[in-house]
Length: 337
Image 1 (spheres, rainbow, N blue to C red):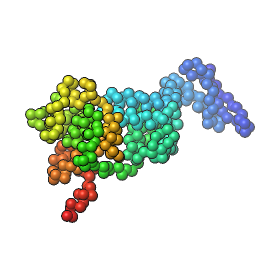
Image 2 (image 1 turned 90 degrees about the vertical axis):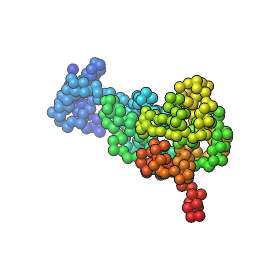
Image 3 (image 1 turned 30 degrees about the vertical axis):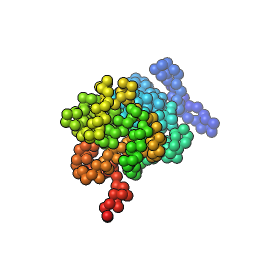
Image 4 (image 1 turned 180 degrees about the vertical axis):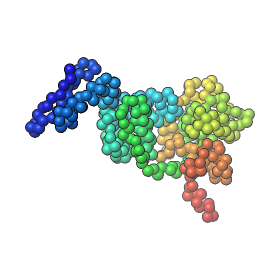
């Protein structure tokens, strides 16, 4: 049964309503922006038409979809298909704390700006104040969540379409000297020590190291062969093995296909162990990701050509490479004698 009718509001003004049954049999009364009976009939006809071609069901789905649903769907995809799923998981945790079960249709630019402001300031359950680079990783994750949900028909529009990330000035200048690095290794848990040395001696990234298999290590030629499926930029490269790293690798047990293990099992996470090492060594403001910076800076000081260093680290552009090449005060003093 479908019909139209008028109803007076508290202000005494009349509004037009339409009445119909949805696919579940529920009786629906809905106010429409009609000024005349003819316009109300038009809205009723359009609604009945949508019910016929299932558009109504899709609109209901869009209306009800909440953020945590599309965030969890994305995280499931990330864990199955992305090497950087751990980073996505951290970002999603922050995003869900703020957006939670908010219907996606209510997430607007102003709501996203509110999230950015809170992340900059810290608090409200979102942790310490975050730097622009960290916030940008979370916003990029949010963009992907909405884009995938839109493609899969779970939402009607992407509130982040055309959204610009924050300007960054995040070039790290934290480089350890030899004495600091030796302190770091000395205070590291036993299973972390060879990983630290590998990063220091090769400039390899954490994921490349933890995913390294013995079949990629060619002791005869003294190189590590990284395939495109294990590098950040998807390109294969050859990493030379130093004499120090060679000694370390020869001492490691080969009871697993992966090079770096813990109690015979593959190592997947070293964050806690790395924090223990830094605290024990008294080293502040240092991340595992800074070790490739240390490598690049160290070999550059040995006058190794940029092209050779870039071939080892896998950097494709000089601009990106220079972000890893830190010029210290000692370098500046050396330049002028």
